[in-house]
Image (tube, rainbow, N blue to C red):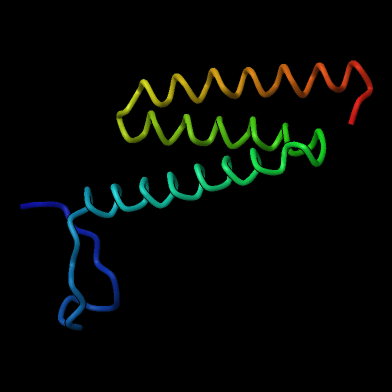
Length: 99
């Protein structure tokens, strides 16, 4: 028997049950949508200040986490690289006293 998660009250309340792996996949997808959207928004705002560069790096780390959770490790690796690039840019601007 497949493991299920119940949404609602008792077993006979007419609420549909979903297989646990579908619930997990949906949660991973929602996390991915939020992570990638946050990353893209922070990228768009980078010119407004150093804080947005740091937030972009965080968004890249979150997106990388999503990539590994979704079993798309190349995406996860690329996002980790982008986070390192963003952190270096943030640190360089900090050292130069800019923005």
